[in-house]
Length: 108
Image (cartoon, rainbow, N blue to C red):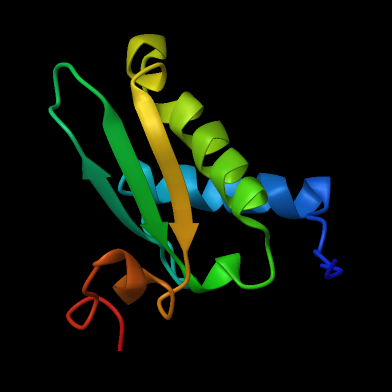
């Protein structure tokens, strides 16, 4: 059975990533590398799929990325919309094309 080592995100790092993601959702100016947020789904009802492409995910597990996205989403959206999220996936720019997300115009 293979052994897998994962970097555990520190609470202070998690808060920083959540705050930066919230700032992006709110449209606040941020000079740091910005996440590219894609939300698939109807604005009024039905399931929502959230994809956040960001260099900052490097070294974090998929679970930590998803938790960070949902923590940020909970700060900017209604509780009703929070329950609609069925996918919250954080991807690096290198991982995104494997999920069918083209980023050539967003990342250089």
